[in-house]
Amino acid sequence: MDQVLPLAWLDRFRTHVAAGVAHTYVFSLNVADYVPDPAADHHYPTLKEYLCQTVFSDRRIVVYYDRSAGFSFGGTTPEATARMEQEFQKIAQVDPDEPLPRDPTSALRLLERVLTADPTTIKEVAGLNPEDFEREAIAVIIGYAETIVPAGEIGKMSPEDRTNIVTLARWAGHRSIDERGNLIILLAVNEADLAGHLRSGGTNVIPIRVSLPTLSEREAFVGTTVERITAASFAADVTPEHIARAASGLSLRAIERAVRLAALDERPMDEAFIWGQKKETIERMCGGLIEVVRPVWTFDHVGGLAHVRAFLTEIADAVREGYVTQVPQGIIFLGPPGTGKTIMAEAFASDLGFPMLKLGDIQSKWVGESERQLSFVFDLIEEFAPVVVFEDEFDQKEQARGNVFHGDSGVSARMLARKLAYLSDTRHRGRILWIAASNRPDLMDPAMLRPGRFDTKVPFLLPTADERPDILRALIRKLARHAELAERPIDWDIPDAEAERIARGLDQYSGAEMELILTRAQVFAGRAHRARVLPEDVQHAVEDAILTRDQQEYRYMTFLALRHCNSLELLPEAYQRQLREINTKQQIREFRALSRIFGKRRTDDDGEDDDAVREPEVKA
Image (cartoon, rainbow, N blue to C red; front, top):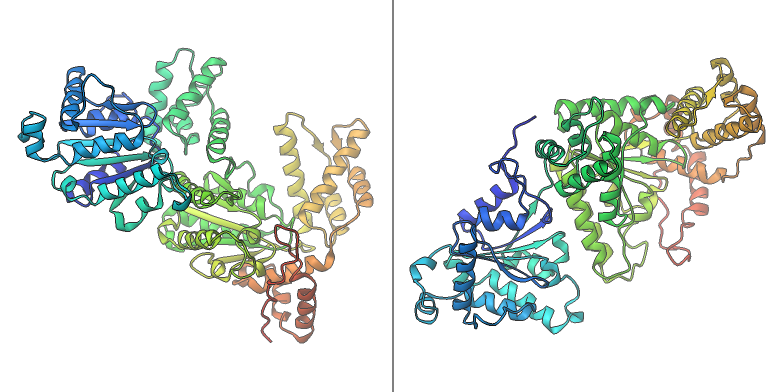
C-alpha cells in the first residue's frame, strides 16, 4: 500500500490562511464525507469533527451553525465545549437560559457580534480576558450554506435571503474580522449552489475543493472497514487495492455503504460489485448528468478502422509513459451514425485502464440550474481523473452561436463560454481525455472545433471492402461476449471463408447495420432451437434485411467528416483518394446540393425549422 499523503486541500487552505489572503472560505464537493487524516491512526472523523477538533483545536471558540440543528460548539473535550458556549453567549450578549436562535438572520446577527467584538466589549461587556481573544481566536463554520445564501436571481429571492447574502459578503471584506484573524468557513457540496455575489472575485471568498479520497486513502479505508464490519470479506484473489481501484470517484462513506451491503448479503466483495455500487451512487448523486461506464469492450471487439486503433494506441502509450505534450487536448469522432464511434471510445478507455464517463444533457428548464449542474459535473470529472469523458450527439448540445434562439437570458452563452475555457485548459492534457462524437459538425460552434480544444478530428466512415470482413468477425466476438455476460452463451460456426463471402454482399452497410444482421441471425438460429449460429442463418438475415436510411444524408455526413479531417493518417486509403477529389467542380456541386437539402433540416426543441443554420463554406 502506498503511503497516505497529507491532505492537499488542507495544505492549500493553511497556506492561504498563513499568507493572510482571506478570512472567508467555501469548502465544496466532498464535504459530507469522512476525512482520511494521516495522523489519526485509522480514525475517520467527519469534516465537521475534523475542522473543530483538529484544524481549529487551538482556537478559543469554534462554533458550527446550520439552519436545522442551530448552534453547536467544537471543543476537544466536553469541558472545552461548555466553555466555548458560555463565552460565545457572553460576547453575543444573550441570555444563557434562552436557547440560541436557529433562523439564519438572527443567527448571523449573533455570529457577527462575536466575530467583530473588540477588546473593550470582550472585557467590559462579556467580562472575559481580552488577551484570550487577541488573535486567531474564533472560527465559524456554516453548514449547508447553500440553504442560507442560495444561488438564484436576486429579484426573485426573499428579503431574508438577500439580507443573508449581503451579510456574508460584508463579512468577507470586514476589516475587524481580518485584523483579529478570525475565520469563516462555508460548507456546500456544489459551490455553484451559493449566491453569485459570494463567488465573484470581488468579495474575497476563496474556494477550497475538498477532494475525493485518493487511491492510497481508499485502500487504507477499505482494509480497516472490512476488519471492523462483521461478515465483511473479500472474494478470492481480491485485495484492498483491487477494491480501492474500482472505487475511484467514490467517497469513503459510499465505500463504507458498499461494504455494509455486501456484508448484509454475505457476499464477498469483488470489483464487479464495487463498480455496480459506484455506478448507482454517482449517477444518483448527479441526477443522470453523468453515466459511469466500466469499459468491457476492447480493440479486439472493434473491426476495421485499423488506422484509428493505431492512432489511439499511440496516444495511450504516450499517456502511460508521461509524454502528455503528445496527447491531444481533445478528440472528436465525425461521421454517419453506426460507424463505431461509441465502441471505439470505450475500447480506448479500456486500453488505457481508465474509467469512462458519458455526459448527459445538462440543460435544465430552471433558471440557473444548468450552470450549477455544469460546475458540479466539471468538479466531479476533475476528481475522477485520469478519465475518458465521452460526449455523444455533440452537435445537438453545442450548436453555433446565432443558430438557435435559447430565450434563457444568456445562460446558454455563459455555459458555452465556461465549457470552451474548460476544454482549452492545458492542465487537463493527459489526465482528462475528452472525446466528442458528432455526425453534423457544420452545426457546431466553430470555437469548439479549433485546435487547442479538439486538436484531432477523426472521420468514422462506412467501411471499405477490405474492412468489412474484419468488422464482421469483430462483431461476432462482441455478440459472443454479450451472450457470455448474459450467461446465455451462443456458438458462432462461421468459417473465415464464409465471413469473407457474407461481407462482400454488405456493400454500403454501416457497422451497426451489420450488427443488426448478425442479431437477426441469432433469432433465426433460435427459431431452429439451436444455440449455434450457422452461415445459412446469417445469409437468411442478409436476404431479409431492408436498408431504410437516407443514402443522400449519409453521403452528406461523409462529406462533412472528410472536410473536417485534419490528418491523412486518419483515413483509409480509399477515402484519402476521395478527400483529394473533394474540391473538384463535380464534388463541389454535389456538396452544395446536399447542403441545400440537409443543411437546414435539423429542428429546434419546438420542432420548427432552424433557418439560422448556415450553409457550410466550400473552398473552390
